[in-house]
Length: 177
Image 1 (cartoon, helix red, strand yellow):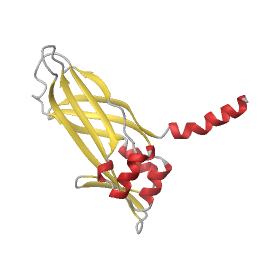
Image 2 (cartoon, one colour):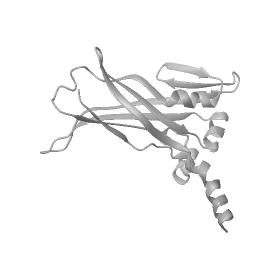
Image 3 (cartoon, rainbow, N blue to C red):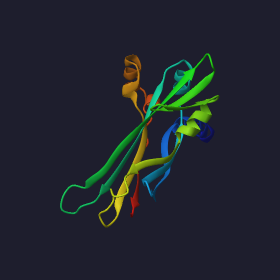
Image 4 (cartoon, one colour):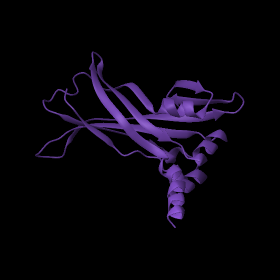
């Protein structure tokens, strides 16, 4: 009986490991402003990998917000930003492409694309004078698969299936300018 329970538990492990989790994030002051570096742990489900390999583009959004807590009113939100990424597969070239705006990078394997997507480096999130009030700010970041960018039939599938709902929890930390 114990062996059956352990086997059932072990078969659930790969399903639990799939998704997005924020591992670390930090903001550094530079002469240009405040830059964000973050690291995510991204595990695609087999269905998502197959969808990309069959030509379906996947859109991811990294959301960042900076708040200043206030005891007398709602928290002030001096910064709210998002950055979009798109993963596509080009079968003729047998390459994956990770793009953000007009910038892109090509890869030969899906795990390389996921590794590049999991790193946010040097994202300018605030001007130098944006954090001029004394005291600590609260920063938060998350990444999610933007299911609204999927074709309509896949949007319906995304509502019903956990395989398509990749969203990290908000990763929060304090920032003292």
